[in-house]
Length: 407
Image (cartoon, rainbow, N blue to C red; front, side):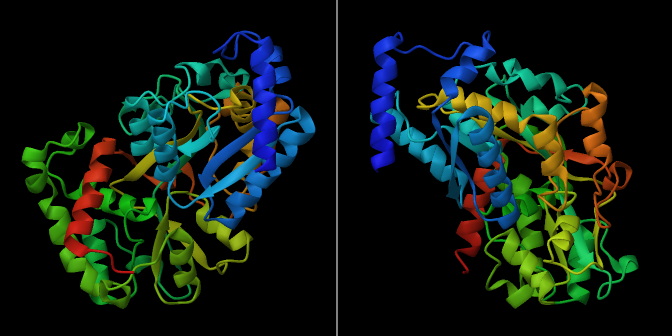
């Protein structure tokens, strides 16, 4: 509380010498960096993974040493809570001095903030100095977030693709399912050995979208907003599938792992045989951190799995916009991106293009040991586009209506 009061006092002091409503001038980056010194960034980001939390702690230390910025990780269990905070502040007329300065975000949360004009100025992300290294030419999801144009309103942080994994000591590779339909058949043959986190957990909802993407007659309909008239017909195969799958799952579908870390623990404890994550290096990272045995390996479906980019965004009323910009730029730096991609640290794939880097920075990535369970780009298989954000919200609502809250 005292820290907030001091920050507020500092903000008042700045307003005395700066024009009211003045925004950072990204054409003068040195000015932005200087203004950022002494600011505190309240970074609202999912806090459910120890290795990610440790990476953010490292980031905080580097920002303090290099730029005099204090980074405070506000740990979330649901990004929607941060969005709701900004919505409430706007409704209360708090257009300056907001309590959130940076949000880890994508998908429906980004779409909601963009639609409600809750984000800092368009284009800022592509004006960051380290944007020049970003692989936007080859990664379509960097400029389009779940079909919604990004327009420089958020800065890319990492790449994601849905990947399954299993313990080869217990589940032979030649018995693995190759599609959602084959997963259902596998569950019939191996009852109780699969589960997924209960929506609205992001990983659990992503599994439902994967099934939808495989079962829908015309996948292009998912790239448009939900049409309530056709929703039941389009999604009927998904819920028919889940009706069959749930009784075959861990605890007969009467309980669900809370999130991905809980699902990972089920694999470690030999309670399930197949789990999944939205990170191609997740299995290697878990092995490197002693969370899973070194016999775990990854696999995907040959027909494709969901892929996206995750970002950081700045609320329109952030009280530390300059420091938030410097933080976003640091997260794009080759040093920070290479550390993030190391499975011993996090294992999150980079958004940078190797051919845009200097030799020394490229060498950082080439030196990485991506781990024995990390699939090569060729092995990852095709990427399936994320549905429009409205599909996740609507699917989660329907899931709750049909299956209730099990935990």
